[in-house]
Image (cartoon, rainbow, N blue to C red; front, top):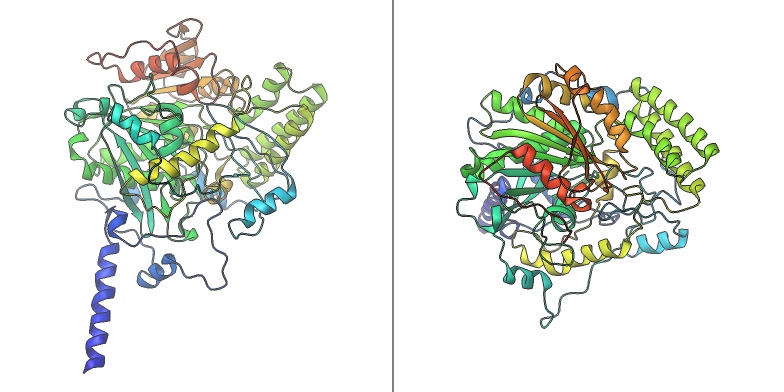
Length: 576
């Protein structure tokens, strides 16, 4: 009898645990805190690892999506639409994924539009990996459109001493910014973290002001830190007020995506997304659940802004959102899209890179000739949808550009030096000062600016374009769409962006081609042109990170897209 009682108690415990795991909007403090977050150098290589992920899989043997939405906002396959899906053709192509090289890879560091390229010693890489109990492995061999943070030398900071001051809390004491942060389970065992800043830092009445959903690039860069403190949030990386924050008069929703980036996590590595379609579907589920939780924003004018690889995902995600709204499966007042430094058409952006570097004097003619030959071969393979083989050539292209330039190439801003120490400091501040204040975040997770495993998991999708989704949005919707790009950007050169924007096939293409250019607000900040709902902005003095490099131009773009005359946003002439 006693044995039966023990058995019954055990069953009740397991049942209650499974029920607890079915939650959608998650407070990790009320759940088991996973220690095997999929993030750089945090994988375990034990022969018999004992992780929460393994126990979770025993309880949930299948990974079928849980019921995430209240009716009528269910998530159905039809939300993905009827456009030819590049991803299905991409991964099934005859070419196979290229083998990653060991040793030196291209390492471009990104902060404020800057990148850093250096040649780390092999022993340095070995020591760096071994401090996490992980054998050396190859780095991603291609700098992502949002920059590149290979050889991440960040190590977890020492625990904060009781008497130590917290500059983040001190900044919030001077100016409180009301916000909310939560987890959403987008697939069973896959959790996305979001951070919502209320307009002007005040929750009351915020639903009457526009909402911007920010999609970071990478893939694998963390919006909770980079987008937040390095670009558009209320505080800078020095924990000082940002004069040009997007939170002035607007609500800003930052999403750590794909799963495994920033504070988002997966209970095992198999849950990492491998295609743009999977990444966009996770975002779709997260946004649906956001509106289920924050119903007050369902009528709020909402705008989707993406940067770099996030800009590449925006057309696909925007299309999924549009279809979900059209079929009454999502209540959202979707008004427009902003694409900044977008990797929308990798073919045309890559073709413009060698010429940009040659015209700037960074490479000489022999290097230019070799680079252009590689870029044209890449273009041919992309047209044939042999993306994996094309990526191999892309790796070779970047090696040539780096090794033969004879100088550090800042791929995010050709005129700026690297600033490695600043972003390293940001990672330390995120873990030491910011993370302890986020009550919904598991404190055993280490925040990093780039999740290497996430980046590598999506590597076969790097060169897959998304321009067809953008063309469909222009033809089938009234969404206002702004594309903007800096003139100092090497990853997505301005000429490449201009080429793919003018090559879009839609009903307003002829009118757009002949539209007159208009100066952007301020002194020599560039030009924009517009036809129907599409506008294109050539931003001067800016690299890959337009919001931080040229806030005056960025503010003009925001006002143009949002067009809310009830809000007053003064011109910004200086950076904070």
